[in-house]
Length: 155
Image (cartoon, rainbow, N blue to C red; front, side, top):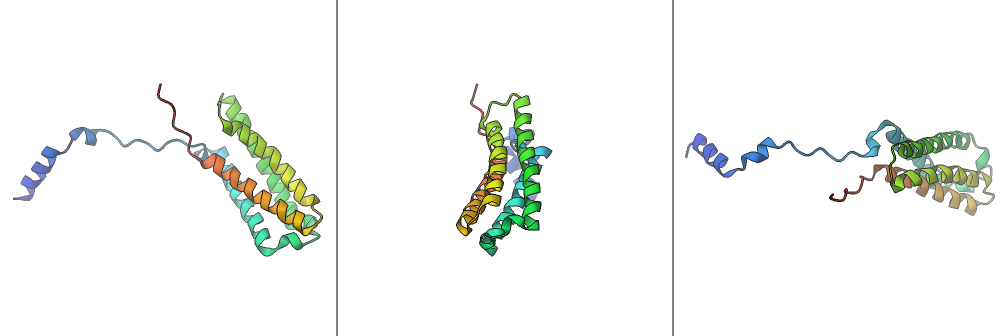
């Protein structure tokens, strides 16, 4: 069988409507929008710092709260908390009736509290616990934004 004949036979058994339909676009996620992409980026960067502190045993440093790297971290964490709150406000203004709006507000408030708890920690164990909680919180901050939206119910 010639190539032309083989191609003609293949075209006869295929569904032509498949070629006409464009592929479905991937679902839109908030993480694609600049504000939320910034939240993810900042959260990942701060989590990297916290995880490095955990790995290096920084919790054993009694003067941890006075370190320059902690002061810089605290400043960046405050910016992230503001961005989380901005995300909350943005979703509220969009009349989004989802959990993410409330979660972002909670993350904003919790982040400041966790950083304060780390600064106030007086023992190695308290600092280690505060660092672990910060790591989890920053991971959650990434995951809630990057998780695709649930499928919409059929109407």
